[in-house]
Length: 395
Image 1: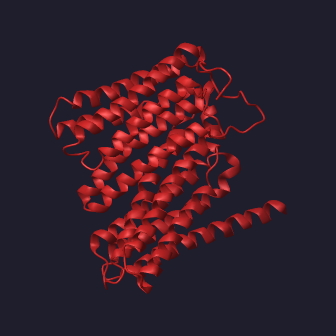
Image 2: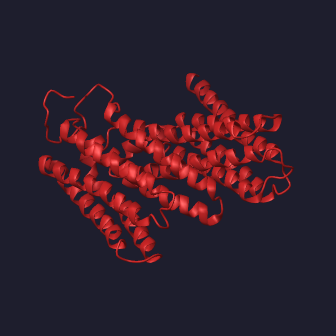
């Protein structure tokens, strides 16, 4: 802990010139509770892979991710790691744990508990912003916008406690919509306090790693709970290949380029880049569940329709989002040649989508192999494209 037990929030941007900002031990500990929350979300989806089950999975995923993003954004700008910061983080972790506990029936009998936990987590974030607003005058215009926006969103959730289903969920959706649009139009306010160019990509990358870990855990779980045979082992290996391909495609593309555009007041690119990570996390966790289900049915002649759509739909979503993330990092002039990488991802996404539509008679092992090949070929094309660019740049 810092030498002073209590410290007021301070603007962290630019204070460590010449040194890359890294995630603190407190932030890494905070992430652990989201490992649990995502595992519970994946378990929920695994029990119900119908259309309603998928929609429910997405509906509960968004508020949990929103809590993580809000806390990460605050830490990026104002983190002090003093006693007060640690205590507030502890309370936030308790609220996220309550969200995870209420996930299983979050759209049913536990909806009130889920809403109360979310209100608690957002309220703590608002309190942190209020404290930072008092101590950091330069950040007040931007923080005023966040305090009012997030406060209004939390107010919708609070109001939902007093109305029945389905109107309760309509208020949830309204509250989340307000939260998500609050940063829009703040480009002129954010130019002076742009998130740290090394810390923010690292934090988003760490969350992506957490979700990838859930995908790997799902593959292992699928193998453990089924009698070992050639089909299940090959299907598991293909599932690991898909996860490894996603890791490769993501971490070879991610950098702080969108933050550079934010410094010029172009916040739309930055917001697109950040929110695309929400869709990627949703897709990665769902991919793990999809592979797990395919392993369970690996000995069947034909993969059930709902499992085929879950796997192919999740992989398609991941590839589309990876294409979008790559595009947002290719906005700057020097990265224009890299946009071809997005085309490869889009092509692979189209191929996997065709498998979802036309792969009615495909066996689990054959379908998973084709999906894995599409992902691995995309990685190979990325490597080939990057190698050509290096050769051209050296000439």
